[in-house]
Amino acid sequence: MATGITPDTFYEASYLSVAEYKDAPTSIDYDNLVVGGNAAAQDAELARVILRASSYMDEYLNQSVIATQYTETQRTRITPQGWISLHPNCSPIISLESFSYG
Image 1 (tube, rainbow, N blue to C red):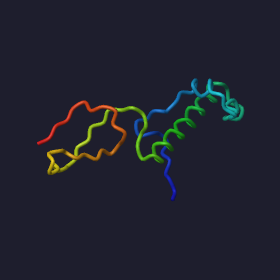
Image 2: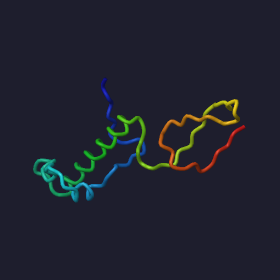
Image 3: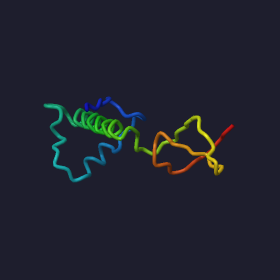
Image 4: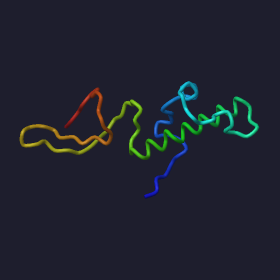
């Protein structure tokens, strides 16, 4: 099954910064991503690579793993025990700011 990789994530944010990547012990040579490019061009290309990788993670997991505030509307039923059973689009839910029903 092919997975489409968009050029940016759903929330247009990378999971790590260029500085965090450079500080991590990696085996990738990030000084030669753009042949003949200066340091700014190398950093810009590294930022694009990180953004593509973040987008791949979002597509693979079918959700963003960055902590975000999300509003969801759905039609649901009340169980015989009096509970409202919800099935959120994204999980895990860390906190619930407000809940309305009617």
